[in-house]
Image 1 (cartoon, rainbow, N blue to C red):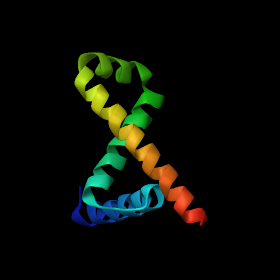
Image 2: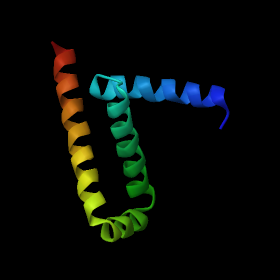
Image 3: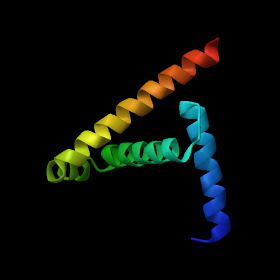
Length: 83
């Protein structure tokens, strides 16, 4: 990837994380990126996601934790934005 594109894509991810969960720290951006990519894979290639879940049950549990954390952070952020 070109450096300029990588920087521009990072800016997109930062803004997406900020809008989704209320912050764009490196840790939150990595979780948002994992959540978004896994969600896309699970929808577009469910058999692949199922295979991965069966092959790596510990990773599946970690992904569940990430999904739940992103969901909770999003709910908190939306509630705070309404105030």
